[in-house]
Image (cartoon, rainbow, N blue to C red):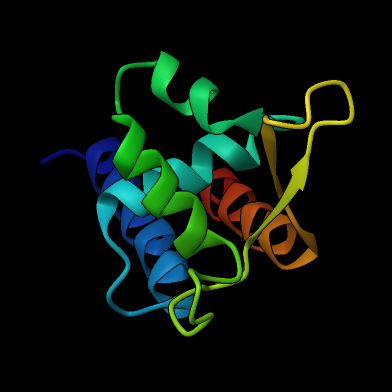
Amino acid sequence: MDRQERIAIDKSLRVLQLLQSVDPDITLGAALCFLKIAQSDGMSIGDLRTGGEFVQSSATRYAQYLGKGGVDRRLGVDLVSVTRDPLDGRRKVLRANERGQLLAQQIGAALRVR
């Protein structure tokens, strides 16, 4: 393995460590979902499905987990806010909240380090 490959793996490990600092049991699917939401200005569950990575049930479950949780509120990691679209009340818009934005900035910084 050359130096560039080691650096890339080190950066990847740092990103995974940052994600695990939120929840040691975070799944890769939830992590991918968070990263997609964090890089957007707001997206719906339908938008998450458009890329083909998620089916409806997974996208909904990840949105709940990344937000404040499901009905019991015990499972959420509070990285994402969920609001109703003012133009379509049936559509929920997902955005990285303040805590999620901070994590996204830390991830960006970890990827920039040489």
